[in-house]
Length: 270
Image 1 (cartoon, rainbow, N blue to C red):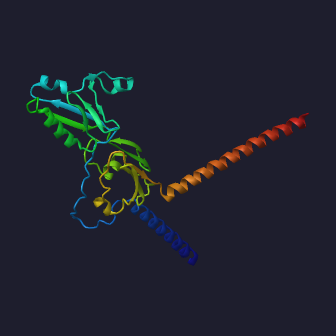
Image 2 (image 1 turned 120 degrees about the vertical axis):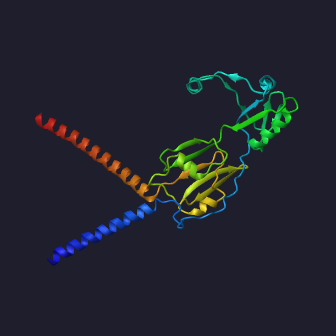
Image 3 (image 1 turned 135 degrees about the vertical axis):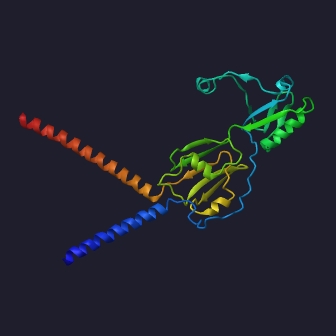
């Protein structure tokens, strides 16, 4: 009887340890674990304006109540150049502007304009001011087409994300990437950003609410986010690699043994 009680106690203890480890594992998946109050108001970090840079692609349209008055301020439309484009665009679309290495674009009627360092809102206001000399109450729309961020590593949908908003956060990027997998290292997320010819590398802790007020909360075009694998993933990868190696060795040994056995049988028959 004492042995049975001892055995039951051991099983219960093992179950508690297992449940505890599972609970700990689940808690490690949570974001912003330090937020405990039901309501909390914090000041958001300032949003860095997105400035136009060389190699950016801009879509600019000029309209007014008199369509003919602004027609010559717009680039012509063109048919899709490739089959891939044809699958996306069923009708002709307006050409776009590519900012050259000097930060300039060539604008119809206005000539060469230096746009690097301006925001899309600033360029829009500048064009409206210039075009107002010829057209009454023009409407100008400026969009940055190549605003994308890249999310790699332990997320469900890694890859490039095309952004259509002026404010885009690291949480938006993770959401668009399908969130982290359970194997993502949440306390060591790497952000890579290029600024003024320099590369900045920042480690971010998604489990801390400090991220929400960090200067890196809002992303910039061409930011790279890399979610590192945690120790469980690395251990599984190492185990799978060793397992594959062992299976390969066993297969090789079995194949070699089979060949040797066939040779021995053939010699014995002779």
